[in-house]
Image (tube, rainbow, N blue to C red; front, side, top):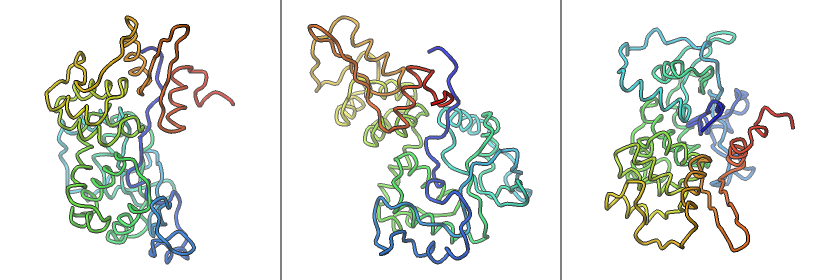
Length: 323
């Protein structure tokens, strides 16, 4: 891989996906508490999140935030901090910190000092943050729980939101299960996605790996083996069932193949080209060779994912090029 890559941004914003990006006016508080966004108040899975009273989302310069002088934790585990720094460099910060405004362009941390420190160590200039305008933790927690119904998050964003509600807002697994209508095992399985390697998490967030594939990969404890299997899933189109069988029999090397999948004979080196292109573009690539011509099919999940792929293929088409 050659050439300098643009800095990665987070795949999602965790709880930041569930709240507005500017302060809410006071007269909107009743609508915010009602949890409805349609005129008839009818619920809908694809509705945007309702306004959250007393909080909004922003990306803030890390230098504008100061630590909370009343923070009880003074010692941070170096190993865990190094893992967090590596994860932030790879996929960005999924869980925003919580701050309060203390002046013009000045904020104080309420929750998330470990994330704030790790973001600085990772060399990032901005950090996703929930700017809290009130002191009512319960109101903010309840509004965010309600908005989990209304926002279509990818599995990784959903897991990050669950974890932050548990850690920062004192929410319990039972509260999560009851408020969003899911079972505790479902919540536990979603939370386990945060244990995947950063490379696998990036593919889950981009939509090139399904949540089913991600859960199957949790059966592999070695991060490098997880990455190899994820690359094969993307390049070879392995089904969730096929991946589960590979994991069950311990076939995590690069030379093994799904036992239930028959493969057509291909030209020498074609499979290697498939795998190299898939790894380079971080998506599924299929190279087919016919009698008179060949084709290359490149899969993408969203428009932004397509723009990412085009930027890799032709750097002249990246965002900094005038349109």
